Image (cartoon, rainbow, N blue to C red; front, side):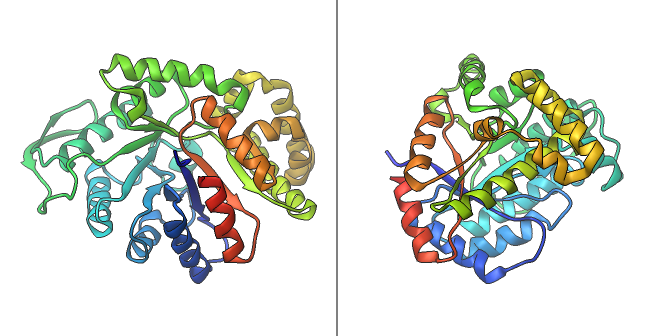
Length: 335
């Protein structure tokens, strides 16, 4: 059975459209499961996904992630249903609450109550995809006019993956979503979390094999020492930033999974010496648990270990400039 490999598009920095298009075409040709575009406070996700939908035929297209505050549930449903139509039914809805710093200080929207908004957003989007009239009496949304989308969605059930952290929200994900996008869980701790989620999936009357857990980290193929050093430095910088600068949620997640001392050291180093010091405080053993860097063969072994722990989708990047070489590596990873 082919391994489910996903690839991402950078949401910030310099935009190299032709390189992105070439990557998407390679992904389409080599059996990559899905391409994901993040949003955060950089470029929007939907414009790029629309362009990629027009340049690919098979690969699925996901948002990894868009938040549930800066657009209403109806606007999100419009975006995704339109993109699903343009792509011929290849969209994966990736949603999350983001964090209060981004929501309140970038979008200027009150953050709470996050759980209620997430639940009601999913319910309302499901109704719109299914062409059910919007008559809804929620805690946040009260809709009485029975609106429906003025076009027929390609699919009445568009898969929804949720990025959630807290147990209550993770359980909601298992019960109402099609996939879970966790974060800051080390490989050594994933199986226990996955087993719990799959039990909740069963309790909701669904089959675990129909529910996708994306590995809460990344794999980078780097086949020479210099590339490996660069890849590890980039991964460590990202991990340090989320631990030290993105609120307490990610710090608490790391602490809960056995890395409190390391997380404390990263925060202290960042406070004292800034980003470079924080990045330098990330130990290799901690980094490897979440963001693995290695040769093609080592990365295949890592994917198999992640699958044994319950992950069914694996985010991969390749440190190669030659698109043909990248394609050959991806074909090996897919199997």
